[in-house]
Length: 94
Image 1 (cartoon, one colour):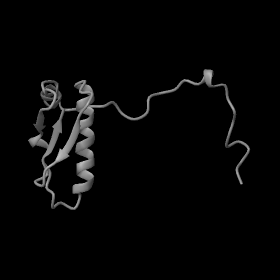
Image 2 (cartoon, helix red, strand yellow):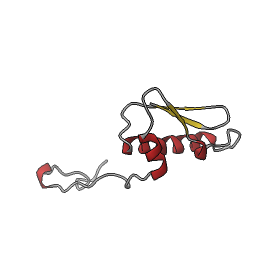
Image 3 (tube, one colour):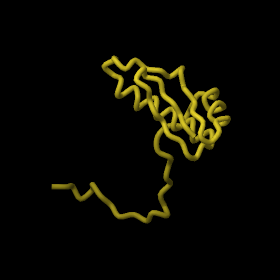
C-alpha cells in the first residue's frame, strides 16, 4: 500500500527540469575522420578494435558502438551504420 506522501499532482510549469545523464564526449580525431567520410564510404576504426574472445566482448561492443554513435552525431553524420568484422574491428559506413 502506498503512502499518501508518495505522490503529488503539481503544476508542470513550476518545475525546473535538468538534462538527463552526463555530457557526451568523443574522440576529436574520430569526429574529424567521420566528418570527411563521404556517402557510400566506410571508415575502419582500428584504434577501437576489441578481442572477440574476451568474456566482456558483448558489453565492450555495446560501449564502443555507443561511443561511435556519439562521434557520428557530433560530426553531423545523419545516416550511418556500424558493422564489426570477425577480428573485432568496428566499421562506420556513411
